[in-house]
Image 1 (cartoon, rainbow, N blue to C red):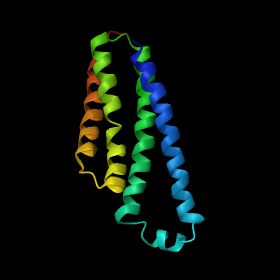
Image 2 (image 1 turned 135 degrees about the vertical axis):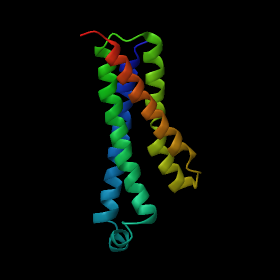
Image 3 (image 1 turned 180 degrees about the vertical axis):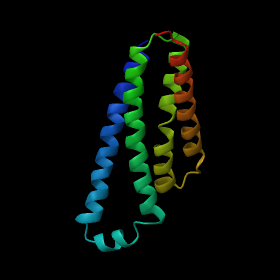
Image 4 (image 1 turned 90 degrees about the vertical axis):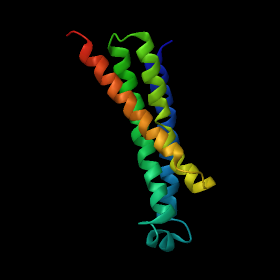
Length: 134
């Protein structure tokens, strides 16, 4: 299976989703009828959390695109690529978890799982790259 390609495609779709979400945040800030209230509350609470979700969603999308590309460039063992890909995709739980907290009052476990997952993926890939000869 072409794991890097899966991460790139998923990252692109994730990026599109969080870009649209960012446009919603811009609408709320600049055009909504309650924009002054939204701006006044934007430094804390749900407004701040919504911005965190947007930023981390875009960051993790770009990480999946970039790291997916790197996975295609290096001759890394298939089993390692599989797990790196899974953990990297699991990192997307972080921004989705922030949104789940906002919308569904979900516990922050998804945020923590996503954070741990993406760190594992990046460290694992780092070790795999170091092991490769020039």
